[in-house]
Length: 227
Length: 227
Image (tube, rainbow over all chains, first blue to last red; front, side, top):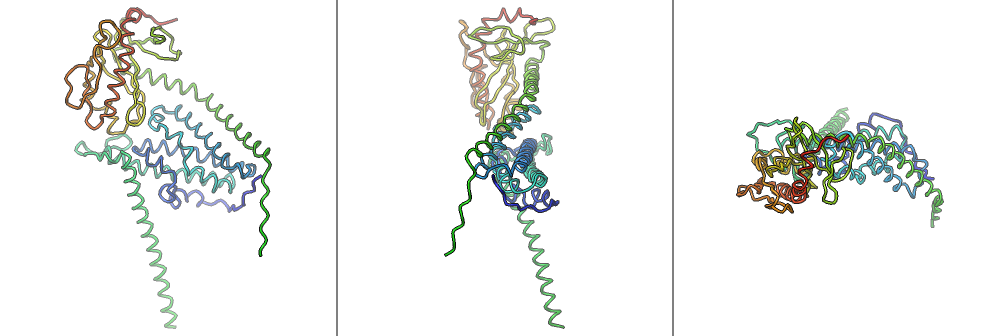
């Protein structure tokens, strides 16, 4: 039987918040970009795909974590894929039961959640090495971070590409929609812009911290010299 | 020379097979449970979507009856039947006012499915409702919003030929602004693929169902709800 290396640390708020921003699966880890680019042409589609992925991520990580001591190492990836595929099939049925409209809009991308590397990556790198509670909390944070990123992309694309937000007209009829934004190239453009903005903010933050550090370091030797 | 570490012992094949079998059984059980739970809800959703579409395309209809196409014969059936179904709409006096017929063709992204209204007395297609479409928002989705395109269906000529073997004229989508005949569809500029798909599917469906309807007009006129 597998004996995963026990690297468990106590449960903390960071387990949840890391996935939301600091280790955001889309903006930082660049995982699962296929649905990110494909279905984010409206907020509704983004939200639907985000919630479906969140469900699969949380459930599969919970099961992988619960069974982690029972899954032999040589068949662990196969087992994870079976578990993930199971929950994707469930999501497929559940979305059809909730809204046929949404199911038709998301198309094949629901089934393709199976191959979203974010889910398999978290199962292998986190859930198989951590306890049930930590895995569920971390997966929830990651899933919400993924949904947040999808909605951020979807909002910009829908707003600029159709002049609407959640189907409601935002701009007046004088606004000429940038149709490219709801086409596949728009996904790349908007993702690139978000990455640029987020990295700029992060660099400014890091630069400020470095400035503060160097300022405090500079002030110490002066005191020492004077003394 | 340092000693090479001993190779880790692999678990036996039987334990691998047993683990995979247990996970597969668990997966199967979950899928079956959710399938059993969601199937009636999904069927009801589909029934409601079809019902909505029928009365959308035949707004004057008060009641409707279902007919099954099998081996080029039209038979009245109950709603729970599966297969190629056509729907006839009747006014409050039980008079046939039109039929709602299915049509499908490959669009830009995926298959587009419609339910369209056909009046067998004047041979006109008078409108449609989109049952399934994953076309690009702002482009392909214009087939439901573009007033000029929808004007094609005030009375699109879909008359049956004299020997009731097909349509008198092939329904065809033409370049925007070049429509000359009543059986032509003026395409949406910038959404040619979806416009062409609409023309293609209406022609295919018309060639198949309209002659059949012409041959079974008595049955349709005199039908009453099944016990």
